[in-house]
Each structure stands twice: as C-alpha cells, then as structure tokens.
Length: 338
Ligand SMILES: [Zn+2]
Image (cartoon, rainbow, N blue to C red; front, side, top):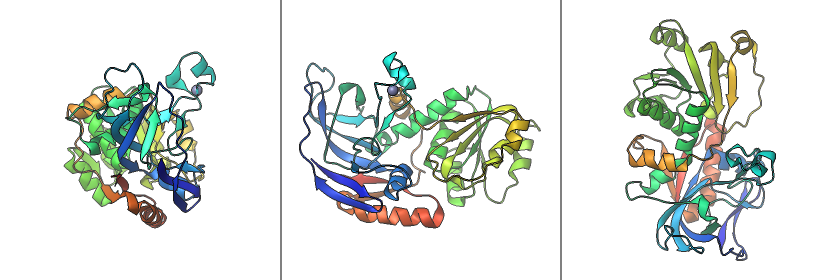
C-alpha cells in the first residue's frame, strides 16, 4: 500500500506502508478517485490535529478483494466507502446507538483517508454505486448526507423559509436539497461567482454582496424573518448575521469546518432565544444520499470543483493552502488516482 501521509504541518510524503492485515470480514478497494476538502487543507496547515495519517476526505474505487459471505459486494464493482467509523467504546455506541457516537472517527484525521492506492473496510462501510451515479457525484455523497442531517436537525418543513449563509459547494447542495423538499432557501454570499452558481442551480432567492440582506429577507418573509438559519463555516460573513436574520425562537445551525476562534456576541441570540445547533457529521444517510443523486435531485454542473492527478497531490496542497491564506476558502479538488 502507498499513499500521501501528512508527516507534519505543510509536509506530505508519499510512503509505502506495510500491508496491513486484512480481516477475513473486510474487503479491499482499489481507489480510483478521491476528494480533497477544506478539512484536508486545515489538517495540512496544522489547524486541525492530524499526524502520520493519509489525507483525503472522500473516495471511491473498485472492489479488488471481498470478505466472506457478502452477496452484493462482488469483485470489480464500483464502490463508495463511508469516510467515518464509530468509536464502539462511547456510551451511545455501547448501547448500540451508533448514529449518536460521541467520538466519531474521521477519515484523513483519525484514520487513513483516501489518497492511497488501496483501502480496506468493513462491509457496512461499502456501498455499491448504481450506474446512474457518476464518480464525481459519488465523491459528494457526504456533502448531501450532511445537508439531510441539517435539514432533519432543524426540523425543516415544506414551505419553510431557510436562510442559507454561505454558498460554497455545500451551501449550493443544501439549497438545492431544500428546493427538492419544497422548502424555500434564501442564499446569501459575499462571493459573486458563488452567487451566480447558486442562481444557475435553480435557487430563486440568491443575494450577493451588493444586496441589503436584512431588508430583502424581511421583504421575502413579510417581515417575519426566517425560522431556520444555516451558517456555513467558510463564508467569511460575521456570525452575528445569522442571529440578525433569525426570527424569535428560530433554529440556527452552524456547519462546516470551523477553524478560527473569534469573539462572537451572543447578545441577539439570547434576546431572540434562538435554538443553536452545531452539526458537521452525518451518520446513517449514505443510502438516502445515493438515491437522491440517482433521482437527479441535485445538479452538480455549477459546483466549483478542481481536478488534479495523483502525482500532483503535493503541489495541489501547497496551492490550496495559499488559496486559503489569500481568500479564506479553497476549491474542493478531485484527485484522479490512476
Ligand atoms: Zn462511539
């Protein structure tokens, strides 16, 4: 096995590792594509803890060895691998309530991620992909799962106005999911390119840097403001904006890879008695996400996605770290592994 290890901040090395023993119940996947996300870049530049681990937040591949007694997992099938593992030792895991694991292990951080030639995994982490789901779409399964998890957590209903602050790929996907479920997203972003992408993806209310968000949201909601607000981490918009767009008692969710600790005033949040939620992992939604993609619920054409080859991984991380420094965000990048 070989892969790109983060040996220390700003330093990744391709290393051969000893063949890990594959349990008879596990299957082995030859990775064909992987995804570099903001979390990977934050690990790379030392803002997130990760050391001596292979980076890469999502991956797909082809089954090369299958464990015993698995009927639908046949050799050669195109497969998505869930990028997390339940800890199996916390209170909830011990009770069998794995979706509420309080120490969820994340690929690329707590265990080896997907910038590697092979990966072995337990069968419950492997999902055979239908032909109607492209490689690119499959790499964004976890984005969709997170979008559904936020939707569930905020108890969003048909017809609800939802303020979406930030329009990176996740914000775009989340807004599209809201439309699919017949809610009404109002997307706000300071990035004109993202704003245009959201509009092209079929979102009617997309407000840019030159709009007066407070006034527009008030107009759209007939003065009520929104009962649901979702703030996406790398949007570079003051967090207090989320509070000012919320109605009294509204549910607010913070999601995405937060790296900076700043001073946030909770004055408005307390005054309005907001219900504040933090959510960045989504367990148990993979099958639903695959079905949503197969049903064409999400249009991926307008997302901002870069590509690179396996050999370009070190230079790509350098470039993305610079991009993060200069613009406070990154282009999520698909790595062609073969
Ligand atoms: Zn656990």
